[in-house]
Image (cartoon, rainbow, N blue to C red):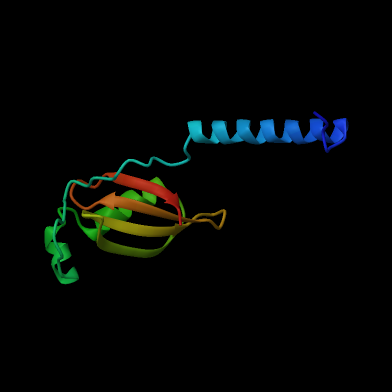
Length: 119
């Protein structure tokens, strides 16, 4: 069987393909974010008018803001109470000193940090 590529080029292509496969395997072993579903302590299982959400929350906006500010240092540029994927949570966008916008999600029932990630 005769190769179309010269031996030096064939070796380079083979090494590249092997390296690409190795990188793919390593990336698959270590996801950069938890992909399991988030479950907040307050679940919203049906369509609810946004005006009702504050009455469902067990912690105040101020308490959630304080928790988010401890989780990520920076300036808060946005905050809201929302029902996302059936979870009642406060969501805050915070600009870090490095000028990166981070989103912090706080459980509206128990005040725990649900997720921190770049926006």
